[in-house]
Image (cartoon, rainbow, N blue to C red; front, side, top):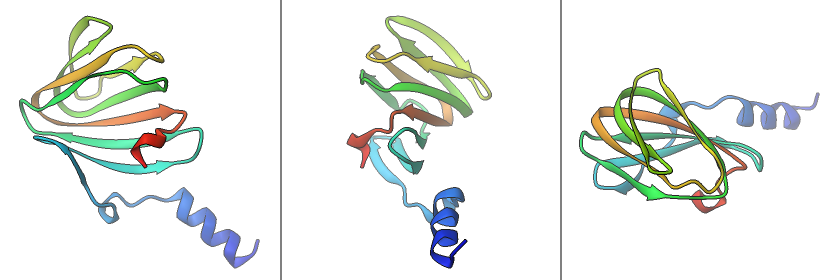
Length: 118
């Protein structure tokens, strides 16, 4: 394997979150795009208590792991409180959003990647 191939694999295969800048999204909400290719994207989203991830929809499939905190999650009109370690799944085009009940972090995974984030 050439040095160039090794550099490309290293740059794509290993992500150090500390080297990625936060992007401010809304009051009390910021994100880091951790990694992506055309098929998959992973994003870390940090919420202050009371911050809102507004109801929205998109054609992407989304899985979200609640890394920390507590969130009221709404998907297609159904609400449920989820906590650290829980996961929610959003089918394509379903309306969804969150309200942060206790400061926390979400790890979002999208298929395909969210071109609108880049």
